[in-house]
Length: 219
Image 1: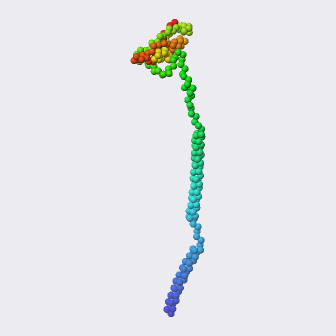
Image 2: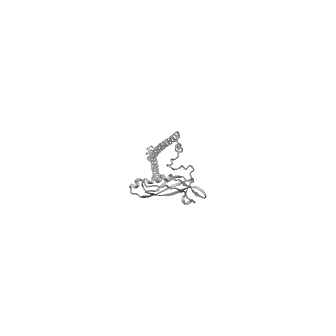
Image 3: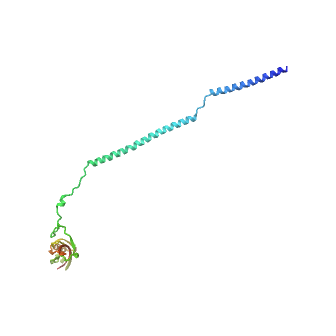
């Protein structure tokens, strides 16, 4: 009788263990089935990454388009500038440059010489009076005061004239250095142009000389 109870107890324990094992297996399979059948949640991170990548790609395409447009915009004015420069150069080449030719009339017409002054075609060199051995000797005519000087109460005057005398003794130029301020100055200047002189000499040769004449004018 005791053996029967022990055997019955063993069978109960084994059945309890078996039931527990089956229950655990069932629950495990149930959880596994639920896990397999349950839909997975959306992967928001991957979606965000993908959208960011798409935005980046679109931004890159937009930046590429903008850079291409900028390059095209930059190229257009350069081409226009090059065209305008080439157009200017072509215009400059087409327009002939007017060469200024010196007028022959100015060369053909000799410089007028004052009355009583001889031309100097040989361009004779005139030395200072202090550098010659013997200066030119001129015969000075007497000059009287003019009427306007007399009416102004002038009783005497002093006129200094610088003359250029060539190697032939002719006066080629006369310049008034100091005068009275009346018509007598012009009278003395005209008389100086008509002077007859002996030429100055240096080393036994006739030379041109610049001489100052102090003309004393009396009433």
